[in-house]
Amino acid sequence: MSRYIVTGGAGFIGSNLVRDLVKKGHEVIVVDSMHTGSKELIKDLDVELYEMPVHEFYEKGNWKGIDGIYHLGKPSSSPMYKENREKLIESVQGSIAVLEMAKELNVKLVSASTSSVYNGLPPPHREDMIIEPTDFYTEARIFEERTAKVYEMLYGVKWNEMRFFSVYGPGEQYKKQYANLVTQFLWAAMKGEEPIIYGNGEQRRDFIYVEDVVRALELAMASEKNGIYNVGTGISYSLNQVLKMIEEELNVKIKPKYIPNPVKNYVMVTQASTEKAYKDLGFKAEVELREGIRRIAKYYSSLSNTI
Image 1 (cartoon, rainbow, N blue to C red):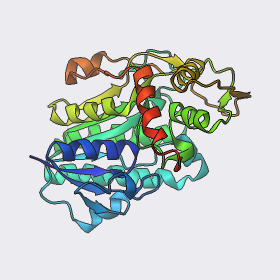
Image 2 (cartoon, rainbow, N blue to C red):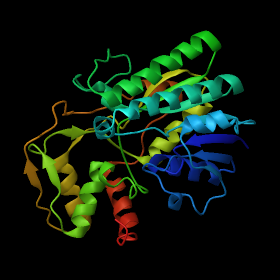
Image 3 (cartoon, one colour):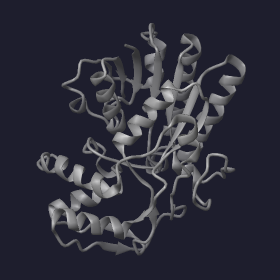
């Protein structure tokens, strides 16, 4: 079995990855600043935990004997960067730290990027599209993607940047207002509240269940391929369609509150081109949105006192 570092391993996606790695018999070192994570998500797992930013962990040098690095521990929402520009510095410091570790240990780095880089580009979104600057969050991701390529060219570092589309699933309760829209709509419906939607609800997202994302990450780690890959389903649903599915799953009537869109650079449509990930990694999403909603409805119903 292998020994992995998972940054952000106490967060939503990270904890799901850690749980799967441990289940398969691997040893895991979790590094997490706990900004949107919680020890509660991994408290039942036998892992080594460091509660600190990634660059501080790197400076401590407690990272010998590692077989691979998963880097998910980074500020992961555009509003975080708008509210605090220092998140750019934190993200860049973390990127350099994990790339240096990958170089020094001669192990592969599999890192989280985002579909938000495709803002303003027509779907389906392909990995070879020319990316335009749109906000601080996406610039932090583009920095890491480009810098990883430089590390490959200069030092032979093995890497994958995985452009996540709209990820939802169990374990989002500690993300609160940063949780996926599917999950936020479900929470509102469970509480009898009005979900808030910008515009008319016809904006579309490529929603992907976290279990599929974990599988994509592990396939990338096992691959000899370097480069950027989309992690999506290739199918987009409108927010109104999502609400309808939640209504049917919970057997309730949802009355959303539609408000004018205050976001200047709002993304209207996301839809992954999935050909490259399937061809190179053998990855194809398996959990359809309606099934994913059924699963999270069951999960969050069991946690109704904490959401």
